[in-house]
Length: 151
Image (cartoon, rainbow, N blue to C red; front, side, top):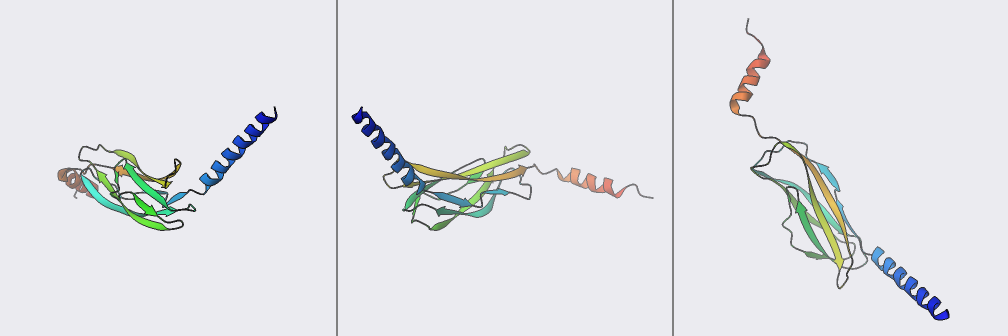
């Protein structure tokens, strides 16, 4: 009975130590969310912003960035000392075959200390609207219709 109690206490203390060390690992990105104010068109690429990745941990971490939903980040994995920040370019790439609609892109930043099995991740979210441009004749026709009939 006494051995079981000691074993249980050792496990609880061991798990607690793991939680404490995990709390020292951290990452933030800013901005966290952005909404593209202008409508984008299929087949276009545009520079979106410089995202900041910050190591909130107590030790140096290696960061890996992945992107989806039309967002593109070309940054290779990089090491960042504790408390330091790095700027990363985020691009928006809209494929030619993208249909009109509202979209969400995500950049995930995963930070991991050397030789650690645990990692901490955070996400940057971008919302944007895609519309194919109207043919020139529709634009011309709409302009004439707004003017009204001539006297």
